[in-house]
Image (tube, rainbow, N blue to C red; front, side, top):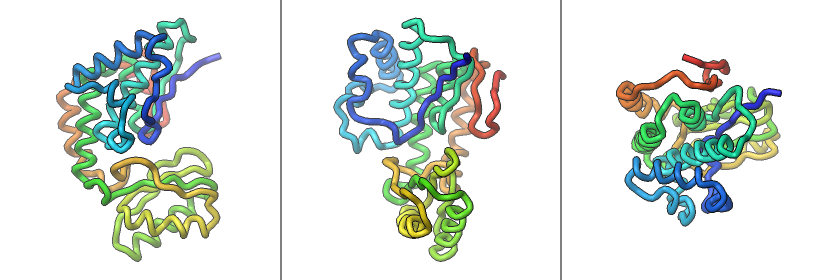
Length: 240
């Protein structure tokens, strides 16, 4: 049987996460210390004490979740856990996968995703953009509602994350997202709820952030992963 390591994206953070492992897994503390040294602040203390509003700021969320994922993977391997044949991550989680697979040093990775978060937030100030998860409605209907709201408001609203059949995430201007939620529920969505994030990731509003991040990536030496990483874009393993 083959095993894969899967790493989450933003929105999965909680105050106090990993507290149960603090004393039993030295790899957790060692990894957080390494990340904290690179970032210049105590990431573990922030993780444990919050507040939640600060953890939801993307420039904090991204290095936090990356560090948590790498820490858990290191603890898994140190404990003799099953060997992993593939790695993958949802959105930010792909950076975690690449770090766990040895493509990026942890120090470089946490600084990179902090910059990624800063660029994203600067592209769209907090409160201007939003994201929402839509559950139990077909993709075509969601796309149609987004197109209608965009046409009526002149704002950006797009289907951005096709997570699974019946689960899709939309992103764009907060006003447009708010306008879409009752329409999506009226169209038959079981749930249509805002996500606890501070910027509208993956939509057209992020283009300025992508351009700035490219400059950061050009300055980092990326190594071939020791374990194949399944990419979000191609849904195929990358070993180069």
